Length: 302
Image 1 (cartoon, one colour):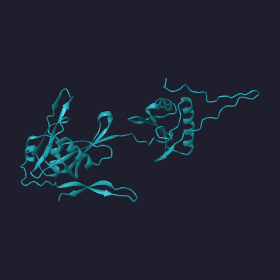
Image 2 (image 1 turned 30 degrees about the vertical axis):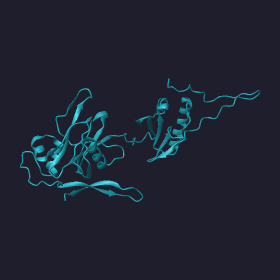
Image 3 (image 1 turned 90 degrees about the vertical axis):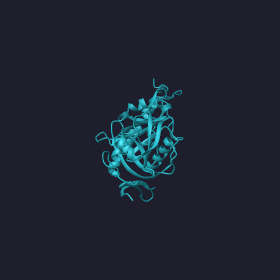
Image 4 (image 1 turned 60 degrees about the vertical axis):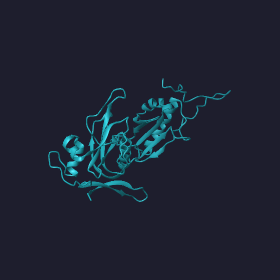
């Protein structure tokens, strides 16, 4: 039923004339490698090192022995990484108390907490998605804004609201890298990262995930617009005063109010500075022997 071969008897006898039946040795435990925080990984995807197990009964016996070994070593958690081709072993592992932790592409990862008397400290996988936007003001006091398409390819309509260009971070990207990439992909405008202006943190999105959305300040290298027609219905450089007086985007208006002192219903300031009153500048924080980590600190606008 699991798509695996039927379990072989764990003890087979080989009898010769006048000899007693001799059981085959019990299977040994599975090979594993140590993970941080007293974890142990059995990796069926490791090239040249993956355990060669097809029989569900033998796998269950080996897994049981491995769990006993790890508990004897006072390990905290056991992990199994399975390719799709061996997905049937996940059901077998569940008999030893394993549960899914996460899956991606062509593999799944299961885990078992090995200390029943203690709280399970394994964090859930991918609790957040991370997005970013580019806040681009040119020297003429215009803000770069877009309208997205909503709906399917067959029936799609331009969004009502003007917003900042932006999108989701790719794996391994910094805020600045993602924001400049997204702005260029959506608008054709090339920019340089300057700072982080603000971010929100909200919960309850699709699949129960949370969301971090970072607004970056970018400086325009070019101003010619060339939109992505699959995502963007309109793009323009809108005078900031016009935006404040006619638009209702709460994130942009709140950012302007808090960092530039520009508020709807109040007199628009003359000679508005492009640089905000305060922003989070990137500083590299580095431990010995490690690469620097981009870290953001509040800095008065210059």
